[in-house]
Image 1 (cartoon, one colour):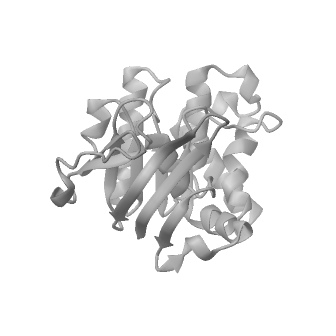
Image 2 (cartoon, rainbow, N blue to C red):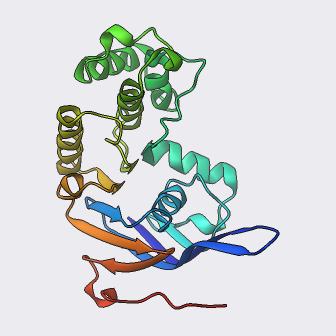
Length: 236
């Protein structure tokens, strides 16, 4: 599904150039459930943002189903993401001027789908996530956990080919977290490819492959043992 070749990302400041991704080579196959782990600042969220096509300030090659993303213009990348990718953000990223119902409906609005069908799908998701009573509220009227549930519902409603999740259960209590991870497992068994970033060993156990990042380098990949024990090269 995805192939990354020598992906690098850095930020320039007045004092220096800070690298957040260094020479990342990664292949993601259809139907995998991948977990990215590592300490804070390792580059996990930066990698997710590249995969989600939210960040276009990287260098290297990115292939999505044999399409060369690195040669696309920003508008083309946005269209590719809308059609294929769902994203669960750690900080929710709900639209403040839309209700819960409208936020969840947003991904469906990009599809050629009858309004009645969209309304039916939204109603089903509201019921599944037990947030029917919140459908007419705005994000600022919700708790952090409720906003997280809405964000997850929005990400999965259009059944994306690729689901990316950044600490998806960080604001949920343990019972809710388990329900969400069981939902992810179900989606994965139905064919959705998933990449999650987590610090939770319990969440990681749902995946079938684990990546370890440190200082922007991919230092371990259970799907590619040849890079095990690779140590980052210190450069000036």
